Image (cartoon, rainbow, N blue to C red; front, side, top):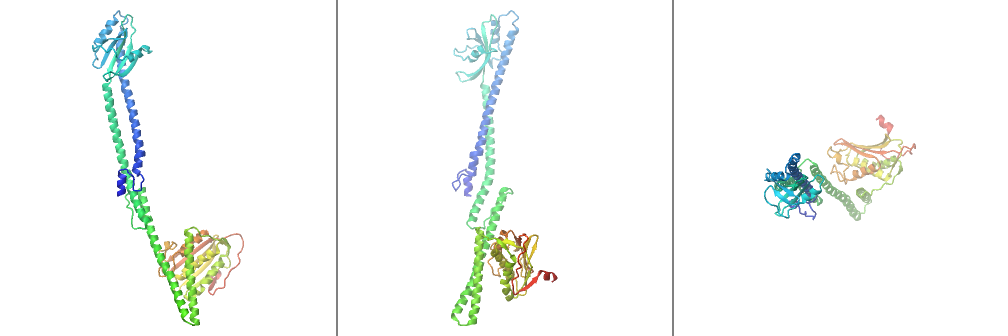
Length: 503
């Protein structure tokens, strides 16, 4: 992928932003490198102090051996000056340490190497030793040749001795070389550690970045309406979960897009049918002069106009729900009155279709708090669906009762029913379980939203070939008041609760 190439060299991606690898290199890797440098410097300082301290201790131990030998001879009547010259001239470690005797005039008089020191020799350690409490002092300095040495001076206080101090000088070349090798080794180890961290981190980052880039590319295609692409899942971690989520989103969007297209096709068909009928009868009525035909035509035009109005209202309600603009005018109301009006509306249609409409009306029910127009809209939708998906000879039953402080509206039919696969989707927007029956596919979605905003529930149970049952529950107002009895006079079979129990 092109994006991958951008990531691999740490450059900016095609959107002009720095990649994750670049951020990681600039932050985490930079901090690790800085920490290793600081640790290396500390280790170098500690090693240098250790080795230099060891060198000082070594010179100190050798100097103490010489001065101790001279002090042990203090009881004997010896010539200290001659003794010191003998020790210096015959010093056994002259290949590593040069031993010097400093005369009273503060000049080096004799050395173990036999070479006379330069007149401008650095005697910093001697100067310090003269004022030191223990009469001993160290100094590390560079010779004019560039060689680094360590010098130790110990002051002498023997009576009658012409020498004022003994001095040891040793080269630090071996120690410095050893320190250099150690620091090179530590630097190489740290560089290897940094390289391993870089390679492992880069591999880890790339294992995240490349799938993220792929996800981003797929997401952009999905945003443009291409729902056929899927992200390849390569791991079972959080990144794999993200791939599953993206793929699930694509499937859901694809399904929604398909349902939307189907909805548009269905609505177009639903709108075209009444418009065709209205247009046809309008043309017919303008060409004839027959009273019966005129009345029949106007009845068809009125009916189809109501269908158009109902579909338009459903579409408007759905739009309001999507934009969260659906408002409810809440008030205390008698739900039996609204339910009775619904039954009254559908009595003639049920009779003309050969469908039995049974209404089991209770004598009274508690009031509910709700929007009567919206609740009537829900009842109309549910009863209309029950009749719409029933055939001649089927039965639609409507019942209202109180249970556990809720008002329950039960609408059941013996129609074609809904399959098990379609049942969970019937309240989804744009979904139609049966495309042979009229409808837009959003009525139940709107009805479910209205009932939910009333604090109730809308549950649907169905079995294909047996029928469907819709149960609506709405919280009742329990204030002790008895609502007025509402029994609309309808030309359908009205069955009281007592009569229903007998049957």
